[in-house]
Length: 367
Ligand code: PMV
Image (cartoon, rainbow, N blue to C red; front, side, top):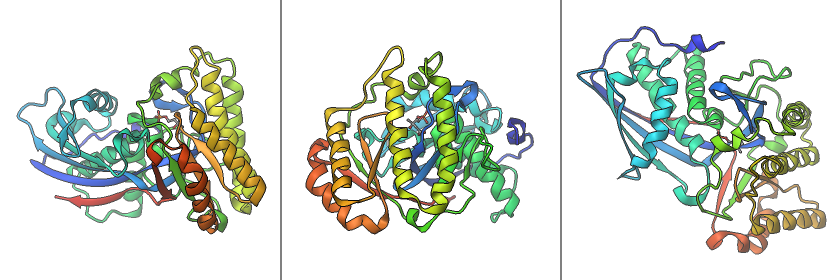
């Protein structure tokens, strides 16, 4: 598919309505870090969709008299949030060509996260994907589609929602479905695309079913480096080309790992990806260290625990100090004890979030 497949050219008019979607966050196993123009990723990535960490967004729309500037208000947990407006305005500008009805309506966006906004957990993936899905529900109404879509229509709806979400925040395109999603063209994965995320199409061993992710909140502060700046630092980065190739090769290797249930190779790829992401930041100009002393304490304790017990627990990181502790469902009891006894002491105010692999976004309400 190409961008032109997502242009909506004919649509009818409806006075008003509202749609509510819940959409989860996701955690990348092979990281996306570096992009080309129009939110095209420099390398393919793969993520686990999460279950508990999500955004619920209601989008109310009412017809305006004149289709002039974008007109919208945003509320977070019931409070007006004008600070969110510039990001949404940018999003609207980027997607206008594909959802031309944006200027025809006044929108009220009411959004809430299941995790604390200031937790340092990126809400852009869940937030942008929830908003993209609400817009797709409007599109569905405006084209007069049946309530129950055919298989082909449903597939288009999901692809376009992911396509729009990507234009809000790259990683958001991996939040529409679950439980494993690939984004970025990869020769070993049929159907993969730079334009949207697709469900991982191959066999996954039972070792990876219901995989657990406990998120340790090490630093709840504002992001030191925005994603936009971070991705930008991969331009003219001395190690960029090697890094993009490495991500590509890691994704190829993961295909056999998922099939065979090979937890040891999974651990080495996932941890290497996390550390490489941070190594890229440390080696860029300007350079950043986003890990905190407690991030390293946690990583070292995980390594010792693994060595002493033979556990298959491992970690990954976002572009921040928080640690995602990943482990098979079968190890839940043992690893949760370890987290409580040894790792929680390194969290800010002892805070952490228990999550696991989830299956994507859900429609909550149409009115
Ligand atoms: O979606 P963005 O532009 O916020 O970038 C996210 C980048 C990482 O979270 C660090 C990695 C990833 O693949 O999710």
